[in-house]
Image 1 (cartoon, rainbow, N blue to C red):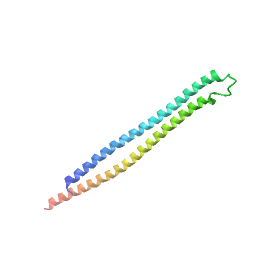
Image 2 (cartoon, helix red, strand yellow):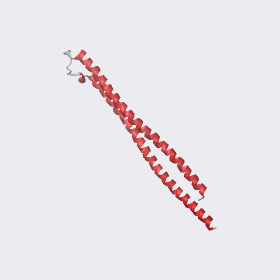
Image 3 (tube, rainbow, N blue to C red):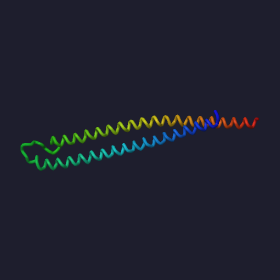
Image 4 (cartoon, rainbow, N blue to C red):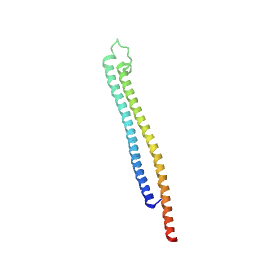
Length: 145
């Protein structure tokens, strides 16, 4: 192959490698964002549970505690409390599942792109070796003429 063709091929692979590195950076940033969202979601869940618990402790102590027609021992037996806690748990679990699926997709993309990056690096090394060999042959041909 001519030196110019090999140089052009190498440059095109370098451009593709740079684009892949940019994609890898973007996917890594998205994974970091996903981790942050998971942490924020856990914080929300704990804060929401605490707020619900405080609210129903107050409700229990003012409405149910001394009323003989209710047999609730504490606030956690109230059906409304249980419904709200169940909603918070199910919402949290659904969002965590979504984030986990998103992270799995990102991991798969990163794996695929890393494979392509390895191939491109191999191609670049191969073409550089070919370029070096062609330059050496051309130089030796010029010396022997």
